[in-house]
Image 1 (cartoon, rainbow, N blue to C red):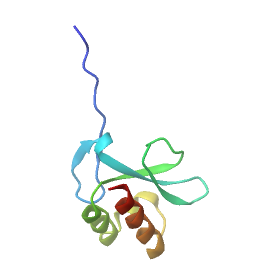
Image 2 (cartoon, helix red, strand yellow):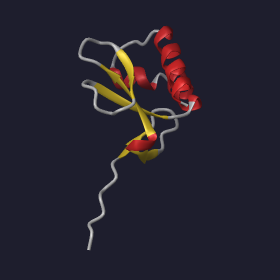
Image 3 (tube, rainbow, N blue to C red):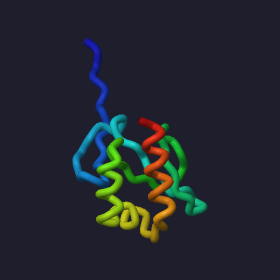
Length: 90
């Protein structure tokens, strides 16, 4: 009998729902302090997860949830770049 693999769950910073890790996009802050999208889920650094919808990213931005996760201020330009990257990925 084959053993079922456990699917890791992560919480979306926008809507707050627990979803399988593969359905979410990881936003990562590198050790140098640079923020970027991590579509592979393997980049080094502190990560926070957001659903693959623009609405969840905007909700996280409005509530400053990513800033709280990374314990640093995030300029508007970075949020705009994250939105652009997310739109390209769709």
